[in-house]
Length: 61
Image (tube, rainbow, N blue to C red; front, side, top):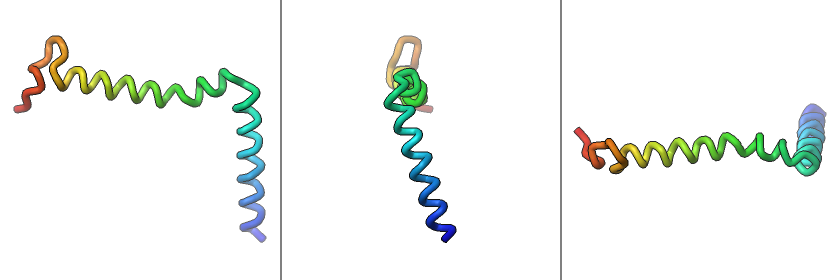
């Protein structure tokens, strides 16, 4: 019985979230922002580590 309640609640939350995601484009942007922030941080790290201006050219100690 508790399993059915948990699964049902998860489905209700998933359906509500899906509807909100479809209706509000700004919500999609907000949800995907961490992905782009992480991607920018990785690119910045790679740029600094692998020979960007002012770096040691990827040399490690």
